[in-house]
Length: 259
Ligand SMILES: Nc1ncnc2c1ncn2[C@@H]1O[C@H](COP(=O)(O)OP(=O)(O)OP(=O)(O)O)[C@@H](O)[C@H]1O
Image 1 (cartoon, protein in one colour):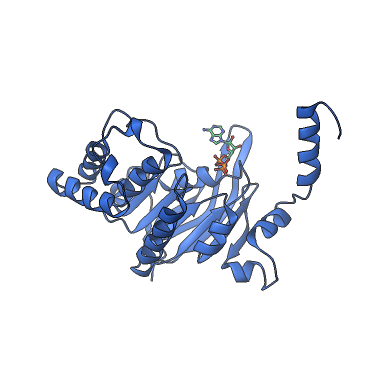
Image 2: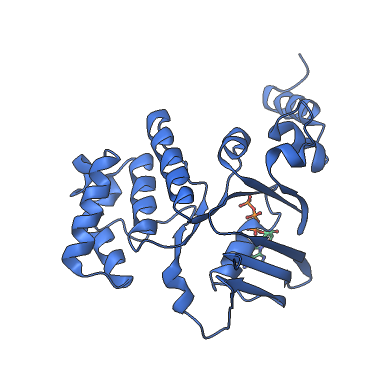
């Protein structure tokens, strides 16, 4: 079986700053991967390179066994993407936006609209479906983005903070949807800073630190079965132990001095 996503020795620098030093991993279809790392580690840069929004300086990327070339846009039909923040479609209603996205992916207008409406009804978005997105709550907007990423039934999903702004009930539904998609052979590659969600949701965790893969495997493997959680492991691997002192110094400045 070809890996759904394969990166081999990918490097990227912005000017003098090397952001990805030598990133390699291969992900089998039907896997949920949590891609984690400190702010600025290079997670979004990796995803943008895979999506063809940025060009790597060195290394290769394969999607479903096919090496990506600069002029190749075909593979994007197999990909669904939830960006972290999008503001461009505020003037449209959810129905208009989703129908448009469906059409861009080659669906017939009526089919796209109907599919979007059915999906929206299941996740509780029906009351907002014909409202302008600008009047939607943060969670509703996130649901619109999630539906938009799935309309064309992609094989591979890239989701950035997929549960952003969703209430606890909706989180459960989306988690189940992700598991269901995975069980049907879809590959989900997502970034999040919420470690308990990553620990719970991921079949495999890839920790990027300072442009390098520092840990890669199922939670139990990367913790070697130790009695810890992902938050603690993250703090340990990324060398961060001084949160208490930082918080105290910060609040000392806010309040004008020590207690
Ligand atoms: N277009 C750009 N030009 C210059 N530097 C950039 C550009 N895009 C990203 N960077 C830098 O590359 C580094 C990695 O950024 P990236 O957005 O990939 O990090 P990240 O791991 O996704 O972080 P976060 O968790 O904060 O979203 C950062 O230092 C960022 O400032």
